[in-house]
Amino acid sequence: MSTRSGHAWRIVLRPHAGRFALAFVLGALTVLASLGLLALSGWFITAAAVAGAGAAAAAAFDIFRPGAVIRLCAIVRTAGRYGERLLSHDAVLGLLADLRLVCYRALARLAPEPLARWSEGELLQRAIADVEALDEAPLRAWLPLGWMLLVLAVVLALIGHVAPPLALAAAPWLAAAAIAVPLASSLLAGRAMRDLAVRAGRRREALIDLLRGLTTLSLYGAFEARRDDWRRLDQDLIDRRLRHRVLESCAQAVVVLLVGLGGWQLLRSGDRLVTDGAVAAPSLVMAVLASLATLEAFAPVAGALLAHARSRAAQRRLSDLLHAQPALPFGGTVATPAQTGALHLRGVARRHPGRADGIAPFDLDLPAGARLLVEGRSGAGKSTLLKLLARVVDPDGGCIVLDGTALTDYREDALRASIALLPQRPHLFAMSLAENLGLGDPRIGRSRMRAALEAVALGDWLARLPQGLDTRLGEYGTGLSGGEARRVALASVLLRGTPLVLLDEPFEGLDAQTEAAVVAGVHRWVGAGTLIVVSHRSVHFGVPAWRLRIEAGRVSLPRRDRD
Image (cartoon, rainbow, N blue to C red; front, side):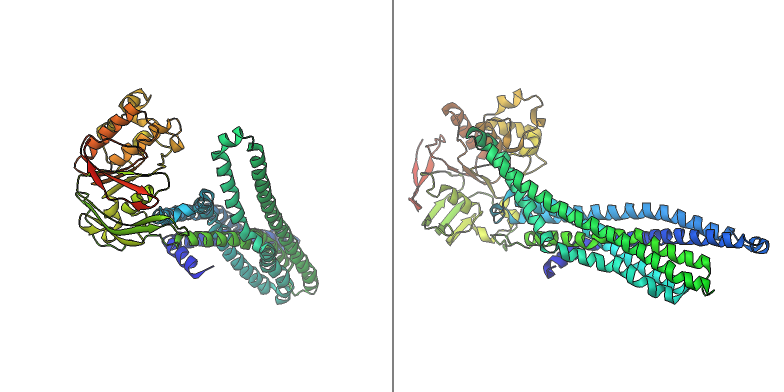
């Protein structure tokens, strides 16, 4: 495990360490009670049989105290197991909840870049499957290994107390079952165990691509071939997981065999000692049954190191995510959001990594409350300009100033409260319409949500919805037309109430009448704020507006006209 991975894991684990420690104590009491229950019961039955051979011995034999201890072991075993399971699983669920929060904070910090470079399948694998795999470390590795070592020490000490030669006879078998077999199974799994998570991510990614392109693939007759490719990935992962489970089962079988051979060796060695009178028969039975009772603690350990390997692989993959650095550092100190939306750009340029195109250096002065239409062909750099203004990316040169403060001087929360951006491909979540509209601020009232929908010409559409604002929307706006989904996203942007609003193709797919209504509604809603719209076609705001054209990365001087 890398140092940074272990450090992050310890930080998250620390608040739950107390519950895990208590769970270990309860589990230790449980396995020791199970050991005592079997060993003492064997001793008690054998001692009672020996005492029954003579009337005097039978009369002197105490059946009450051993019987009470045996009953106590049975009660402790039952209560301890329940308490251990309750505490350990509660601690693990709390740990996983904290890990998910840490993971989602990291994802939020990496948005939009470099998060956009990760495939959705890989992100899902790390944020869901890898986090869930971490429960194997405490539940299937750390706790069982600790109990195993405790039981091994107690049993060898008990057998040694009965007769040191018996401990020497049992020790190799028990040590092989408890330590050698888990180590061997872990070495046999080796690199293949770490490869499982990678293959699971590829399978998840392939499934997402297959489902997303279902309609297109079906129309082109390519769905069956892609489905068969995914099935091969799925079957390969199933086969690998099956091999690991078979290996774990074989390891458990070897543990059972070794523990049985250890008991048999004790019987062989103890028979001579009983015959010579060096060991009492009840004590030998207790020693043999104690060695067999180790199975409860030893059997889970066969897969403990395999579980630890799976958990460690998940930790490493999550560590890569948690320690990834955002593309844009936010080291600014200005905590007050902008108020007017006045923009000043000096020598701003942006080149796409690995490409020759981009935006050539240009200047721009835009007063507060201005309306700016950015025109140009596809790929000219219009969307790149909006990303620069929203500080989704930083310019290669020059400076962008908002309300007299450079964008780089704002704290991230202050900057996001100053600028609202509608991207070219907005996303709607699989939740209610009200929840989608209130993403920027859950405290937004419903009357204001209705007003925003009216502003984007969705008032009649809202009235037709069966549950109004509580109507659930499908992922990516399923159940909405392209224009409706885009306008819902536009309404969500308007509800942010920022002084600078950036819209990338907001009127795409609208007819002329609807477009005119949306343009007027957006203009009224933004009011004294600054509005910048990217569009392939001319947009008329009804007020004097600035127009800026980008051709092959070159930004023309803005001109002001009258509508």
